[in-house]
Image (cartoon, rainbow, N blue to C red; front, side, top):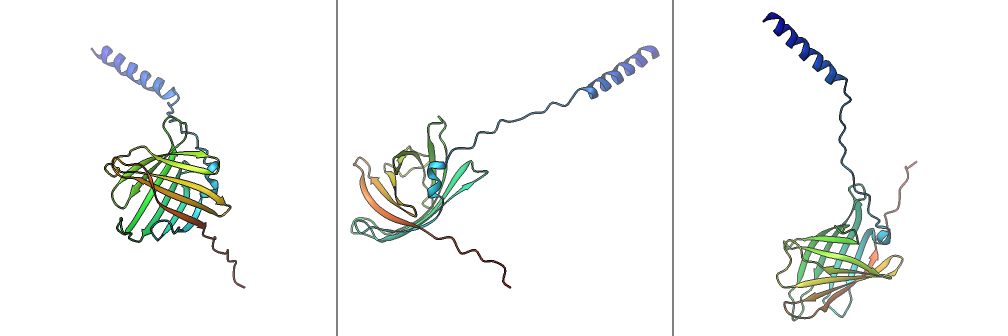
Length: 192
């Protein structure tokens, strides 16, 4: 019996030392390649805008910046529109996250609104215009559709037309904003 126990201890000790000699297994999760946002480089930064006279009066602020190791573009906006005879005054904040689409053929912008709506848009480009077309979302406005068209009109300016479609109706131009880039604050050097 002693011999059997001694043999078992030696076998276990030998097996443990053999396991110690194996190199450790290294697991690696493949990281997605960084998306190519170069067509939207011009859009990154701070913007301020006013609506054009053909719609409700208002002001819009927009900031666009890369985030999380440049895998996403983050949009933040404040919209303030005056009431019209057919639409009440609007004050809304929203945040959007632009990322590659699952099929790899473009980009999807997921928008989270202070109203509680969560919508999704597909971004396409046609020359100097970029179209954001509705593709549902986790909590879109019931029955309503919204789309946006960004038209680059200069180095530091662009326009955004927001179109709306009430339930069962065609799209109409809700408002258009002319944006101008907010100049970067001057860099200050050390004071003498």
